[in-house]
Each structure stands twice: as structure tokens, then as C-alpha cells.
Length: 269
Length: 236
Image 1 (tube, each protein chain N blue to C red):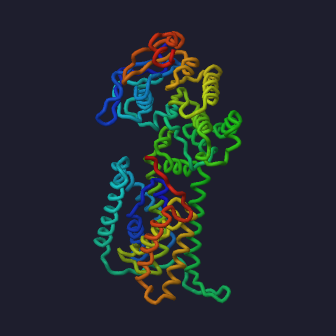
Image 2 (image 1 turned 90 degrees about the vertical axis):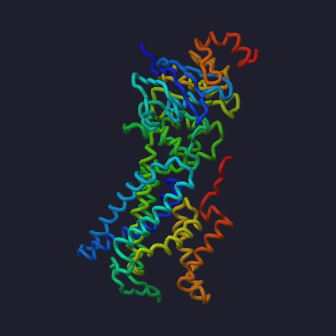
């Protein structure tokens, strides 16, 4: 959503960037005995830098190219990163440590694990930080301006290229964050994020590609719906939920492409 | 004294199509120069050549500096504010946020306070300060982008067809404002206009473009009386 909001292009390599970053974290913590939080923040920083670097090298030549070209480039990135992950770390699953204990606490008769709460807390914190960035800082304002009208932004002295790079850096760091939050509950292998990518895309579409609130609401709504479906409608469990995600994408695009919170986009012809 | 802006034999093209052929003109500091001509004459292209938002060649010198291959962002930071055709409003951002972006090129802290001052000068904008800019009327949007450009404290203001789509009274007020700013603050303006009569009333000098070439240039008062201008552009 950040990359889309900053650049109006959906970055398909997002999931792979997240997986790659998570692998690096695993490598640091598992193989080299780094303390969790040290590795966590280091990987966040590296992902940010990596995102910036990627944008400046791979995306820059196609900055002015038609959207389809850029989409193909991000798909290419997805494949390349996926292959690279396989090549470096192999295809079998690794165990990724959790930041939080897996103890359960009981609130009002429902059991939550500290880990789930921790993940939610971190996610909410990240969203809040991003919101503050976009709405309250000059840098955030410039990012929004570039997303709104890059040509007018140039005329006002905004360095559009670096704004795009910043958007990518943020997205990469966020991806790394989500990867490291997600991995403890799943298996860490190069395909880890594929399902997440699908759900994330569905959630973002559902909420409206431009609205951070929409992304959160979309994510929650999607999670609830898919889980309910899984429990109450027999064949919708496990991997079939991916189909549910696909269906959501289809329905949203057909019925209300702008999503719940997005604004319908009209392009002048 | 050398002019603030000089174009020497500037060519510009859109892909394979040449839009400007050897355009040369000068803008003295503290003056208002009007660029006139029919649709497609190359007026907008000339402004784009200055801000480097079109493929161009030839020499453009601003305040003694050759603009060369500097990107538009850098040219803006040199003190040239270009208000483009179509205005260039950020519709999803509020009026106040649009204005804040006008101060982007400035380093000084006074900039933020000036936003309020600017809103004071434009009461219609003050009323709508927290509204998304896309909800403003055409005239209000034109005021917004003018205010935004002025907040950059430019040395040179490039105005592209400010009258487009606006009612005559609104246009008159806008040009009066530009004239006042020029008189009181010495703001240098290069304005592109199809509405020749109002442009010539406000400008000191004017250039007439036809099919990408300068065919006439001189004192605004003289051009107003000139035979071909009267016939083709002023209608009498």
C-alpha cells in the first residue's frame, strides 16, 4: 500500500522482499547467535536501505515507462528474489524464533497468546508510525504529493526520484517487519510469503489501495471472514482459504474496484 | 544590465514533432512579459522549455546561469516558479497542505508563518483551508496555485494561461493581483495567454508566437496598436 500510495504501482515483489529479509534475520539469530531485537532492528534498517537501492537501480530506468512495464519489472524481481532465497538458503523449512513468549493469557474467557497480542501490538504501532509520517511530516507530505501529481511536485522542487526510493524503502522495511512477525507461526521457507501476499493484496483491495485505514480494516475483515468460512464451511479449511482470498480479489474488482475506503478513480481521456 | 531570463535559439520537440524553432527572447528583471499566440503556437512549450519539462535544445540563461540539463526540481530551487497549464493542484491534499508544498524549496523558518499571511491575502482560500483542493472551483484553484507559487518566493514566475476556464471578472482580479505584486515586490513574470487584450494591458513587453517561432516582439503598448495583432488577436 505504501508503494502504491507513493508510486501508484503495485509492487509484486513485496512478499519476496519480506521473505528475503526474514531469512537474513534467521541467519543472524539462529546461525550466529545474535540477540533477537538487535537482529530485528538491523534487518529493518537493511531492508529499508535495500528497498531504496532496489528502486534507484532497478526501477529508475523504468520510472517514466508505462505502468505495465513497471509491473513486469516487479514481477521479475519477485521471481529473482524467490530464486535467490532458494539458492542461498535451500528449500527446507527453518524455525524462526518469536519475539514474544507463547504463553496464553485469558481475557474474558477467550485465550490469547502473548505472541498474537505482541504481533498485533507491533502491527498497530507500525501503522500508527506510518500514519504520523504521512500526515504530520514534511517528508510524508512530499510523498503524498508525488503520489498525487509527480509532475506538479517536480515544479515545486520535490525530488521525485528519491521520494519513490523512500516509498520502496519503507515498504521493504514494513515487509521485513511483517515477515519477522509472521514467521514464528508458520514455516520459514522461500515460499512463506506467497499466501500472505495473496491475502495482503486481497485485503488492500478490499480496503482501498490508497487508504491505510482501509488496509487495516480490510486485513481484519478478511481474516475474520476466511477463518469463519474455514470453521463453518467444511471444505474451506487450510489451503482452500487461499481460494477464498482469490475470490475476494475477484469480487472487489468486479463490484467496487475502489474498495471500501478508497475513492473511485477516474482517469481523464 | 543582462536580462534575468534569456532564451537563445531554443528548439523543443514532442517525440518526433518539433514545437519550437529557434525561439529567442529576453525577460528583464522586474518586468511582466506576455507570450501571445493562437492554440498550438508553442507558448506552453516555451514555458516547459524553461522548466525543462519538455525535450529541448538551445541555450537558456537564468540570472547568469546556464540551465543546461538540470532537472525541473533543481530549476525550481534556482528560483523559477512554474504554474503549469491545468494548474497542477494536488486534489487529495488540503488547501493548506498544497500551500505548504509551495514552501518546499525554502530553507527559512519564516516560510510556515507566511502560509497564514498568504491565506489572509486570499480570503476564499482561507475559508476552505482544510478542504481537499479538488473541491475548489476553477477560479479558487487558480488562486491556490498562484499563492502556492508565490510562497516559494521566486525570482521568476511562469504563468501558463491563468485565464483558462475562468469568468471575465475573476480573470481581471487575477491579473490585477499579478500587476500589484509586480509593482510592489518587483516580481518578474512571464505569462502565457490566449486572452491577448488583458495580457497586453498588464504586461510591459510582449512576444507573439506563431507555429513555434517568434514573429513579433516589443513594447506591449506598441503591440496593442499593431495592425496584425489587432486584427488577429484583439478582434478589431
